[in-house]
Length: 439
View 1 (cartoon, rainbow, N blue to C red):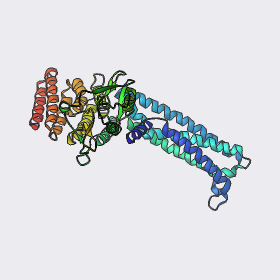
View 2 (cartoon, helix red, strand yellow):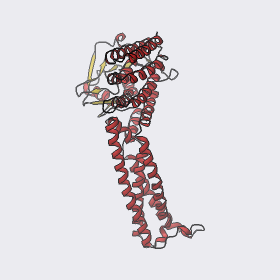
View 3 (cartoon, one colour):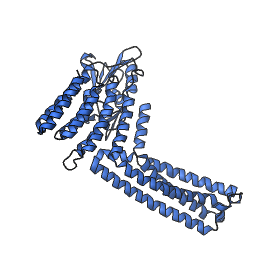
View 4 (tube, one colour):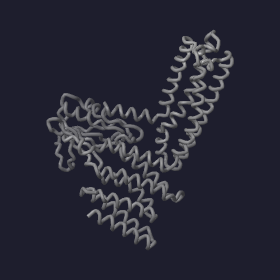
């Protein structure tokens, strides 16, 4: 249930309408509250508040009309600027980066504050028209509209600054890396917080039996969320074992096998069992970063690949992406391997998941960059310097093998595609240095 709530929160955060809708609702409540307060307190009669007094009914309506018209006009401008920024981001950094701009709180609040001020001004105008009292009875409500208009002006300046900052590649890679690190902290537990019932066992050593029920998915899409606790609880209740054939980020066809149930319960039919498994696996039209660290890795790799394209030729952007990727991969190396076998309180195996290892993470991070950057000696030298730092914290034998394999592929590509003898010699020295650290 907790994971489902987190997934819902993530979806709401990625929506462009939630914050503006909440702010408009708050504006309606504020207008009603201040109109009621004006009727009851006559605040302009209180000492020190006479400066809030309005002169006549028409001036209040004219002022509110001006505020409403100007704020809705600026809201349209904000929307236009946002659309231009999204177009530039999609063209320069790739369409997958549009999601990050939509999630930006500053943009959502900027649109929300202008729409909220517009709604507030309309509600106060309606209150003035509906009553027979003169405009002095709405002094506080109208004065609050002026304060909101001033706040809109200040926030417009912030919005322009925020857009200018958000399209800079250093800030883009920083925010992606922050999301990457947040996902790593949730997915890869520390040694102290690790549940002793959860183990990492090679699949070839598992013997789950021959009595197996295949559970197929009903629709195609990306696996966004797997509720392991729910699957473990269901398998424990029904005294069976569940083996997942997918992991977050996997694309499933509508006929793909999602899971296999070993020793399935005999008191339930096939459809009931399949529904229980499918209910714990969320499938959507696009991958998300909640449980899929490869999603953030591919975002950074995509920016680097576009920067290395012949039409751009921007190695400095590639440097920034490589640095962020290596920083995140270093967290994976320093954490225990992800468990793939989950046991109940009686130490009976109930759930086997399909987890990524370090080789998969490294391949997702470097394969495309090596493919498109192997003709650039400066990029390869920067990548080798980063791998040298990564080799210092590579201690497990299987991780060393994965890093050596990636290094061998990089050395072969550079040998075939880089012709300058000085660059080739420098690259070979760096490769040798990394290999020596992996001994």
